Image (cartoon, rainbow, N blue to C red):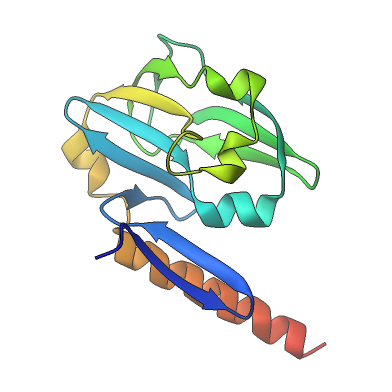
Length: 152
């Protein structure tokens, strides 16, 4: 079985990493032992455009679930990043200061954003979507966008 759930919809490749948790606004979470790795989904990086700059919360910052943890600046827009879980920022991806394009080229791998030491992981995970639920939500979003374009 592939590590990604994926499909192509009208020339748009939709890829969602299996086994991760997701927010409705496209932040993924991978619970690894006592820490949580956080990044943006493939859908967000594809629709947002080429990432030119990443600004993230500093190491040691305490964040609450749905609180601001940074921004991505692209040629098209500025994307606010909200934490999927509560905790303390343990690490910030150092590679992104020199190579922000990693968010585009490898959003589920080298393009990760931060690692958190979670406070209430079990409770916070209950508020997130499974890979299957997020995949269905993004597919529905693509279908709706396609219908809008067809009706013009």
